[in-house]
Each structure stands twice: as C-alpha cells, then as structure tokens.
Image (cartoon, rainbow, N blue to C red; front, side, top):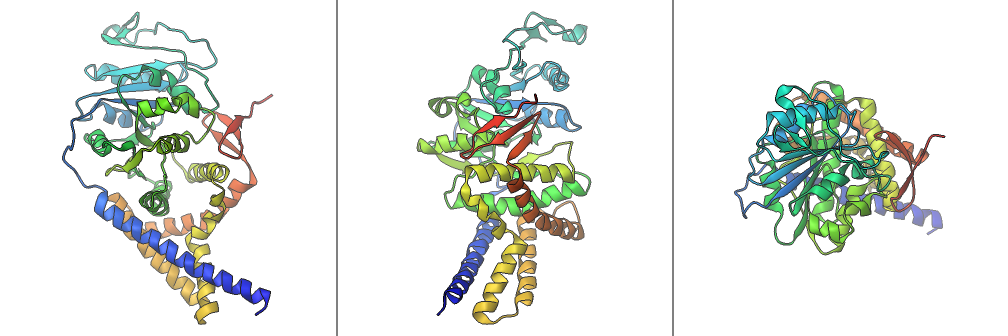
Length: 424
C-alpha cells in the first residue's frame, strides 16, 4: 500500500470519527436542553446575598427596559451596582431614572473616566424631586467615583469601582443587553451549591423584529449551544461572561478583577482561575437572554469574527473549528463514506445536511422553550445563510489579528493577552 493510499485511508477514518463526534455533540446538547433548560426548581438553600455588577456604555432602544428587569427581581437580598465609565455617557440619565423610580431597591451608580484622577462630583439636579445634595439621590447613597485603568480591558476598568464596593460574597457580572425574569437570580443561586464556584447562563436571544434578529436567534439556538453544552457536559470549562455568578472570595484569591484586566476575554480566564482552584461550574436552568436594541447582520458577523480571533489566540485547537460546521463536515464525511463504502458522495452530502438541519431545528425549539416566533421558512433561510458564513468568518479572523471592541482597537497575542493600539 503506497503512502498516498495510507493518507487517503487515514483521512477517511478521520471522516468517520468526525461523524461520530459531531452527532454525539448533537444528541448531548438536544437531550441536555430537553432535560435541564426551563425547568423550575424550588429553593434548595437559604438565599445568599448577591452583588450585581452591571457594566454600561451608551444607550439603545431596549436599555431601560432591560435594566428595569433587574430592579424588579423577586429576591430578598441583592444590590445593583451600575457602572458607567464616562460621566457624559447617556446611560447615566437612564440609571438616574431607575434609581428615582425604585428608591427601595439597594442600588448605586458608579461613574468615572479612567483618564482622570479619582474624584467625587456633585451632580446637577434632575428636578426638585430628584435633587442631589452631597452624595445622596432621593435619600440613597450616590457614588460618582473615578474609574480605574488597571489594564487594557475596558469592561474590567469600568467594573473596578463597583467590584471594590460590593458588599456580598457572591458577585453577578451581567452584560447591559441582558434582560431577566423575576426568578432569574433565584435560579442562579440555587445552582451555587457547596462545591460550585461559578454559575453561568446559556446565551440566547430574545424575540425581536427583523431578519438580523432571526439570524442571531438561529445561531444562538443551534450552532452555539451545540458546542457550548456538549463541552460543559464533557467537563470542558466553556463559559461566556454575559451572565456569570461567582464567589468573590475565590476571585480575590486569584487577584481580584484586576488580575484579568490584561485580557480581552476576561470571562475565559476568570473561569479558568476558579476551575484551577478546584471549584466546579454549573449552568442555570434559564438562558442568559440577550435583548440588545442595536443589531444588524454586519454587527452579528463582526461579533463572531471577534470571538473567533480570541479563541484562536487562546486555544490553538480552534483551527479545527471549520470542520465542525455543517457544510464542510458533510463534505468530509460524504467523501469518507464514498471512499470506504462506495456510497454516492453528493447524495450522502444532501442527506447529511438535511439531518443536520432537522436536528438544529429541534435544538432551537428546546432552547427557545417552544416554537420560535418566526416561520420555518425564515428558519431555513437564516440557517442556510449562517452556515454559509461560517468558513468566511473563520478566514476573516485569521486574516487580521487585531480586534475592535467598544471604543478601542487591540492587537492580540498568543495566550490571550493583548495590547491597545493607540492612534498617533
């Protein structure tokens, strides 16, 4: 047997192994979703105090309604720490409105610009009923603390004053675009058992109008949870920082938030630090529901390219990601079936893609908790476009090692660190 034939046989065996692994991932994620997601549980332990850290920058159409859901949670012991980096940010006015509307909620607003020295400012009066005298707004403490530039990560810089002011042993870092239910925090703390150090939510997207929203919902209901859930089921620590409840003392043992300011993907390294100290992870039964008021196909694509760049620099195995996508995987597996069993390659390719499509729809309905708000035709179109974008997204991530995030540009280094690119 010649070398070329050995290589062909090896590639064919790889195709068969790929088939087994990918369908194992499909079945694991579908079964997990059906058994675990959207299952209400009674309280299993006394509620612990939670400090919610909310990083805010800018305003979109859904910001105030998203934020308001955190002020109306049914949980006995939590505080809301709103963190805005710039005192001129329009998010400050949104926060003031909610602070005035919910005076009985334990909430504080931290304002600062990392380019200035730490300071305390007196804020202008909103009205006679919302006067700010010294450090009180409607009788509640109101902190306007200078932000701290402790590293290149703008989210960490923004959160530092709030983290240092947190008074509870559990900290919940939750992105600005997330909306919650009344019992979301109860669900998170129920998972924080004795040996668990981090509880995270499976990212998903709320029902919104437009094809861009459908495209996002299809991705976060099919491809993303398949990888995310199967990794966690197999013991691989896969966490996104959209909604994470963590033990503050464990983070402090790792150096506190400041220790992760050198990374853009701070969520990955915080999770790694917690796992390295022997703590387990748990996934909430509710999804982390993204409800950003600003979305488009271009923004969605840029976001996936940025995430892929981060994974490539942190995890070299990411270079194999394209073979886990439907069309490329179906070609490889179809060729393997033809080479080993003389099956028609194109017939196998089409049948495999159809089976994948059906499995993805089943996955989506499980993550959604029922039928999606869009039609099956809309799903088919969005699914095809998303799958067609996969390889292009990966190649775009390889082409340029820099990323743009928030208001900065960064050059990534191997291992996950980065340096900010300053305009001269």
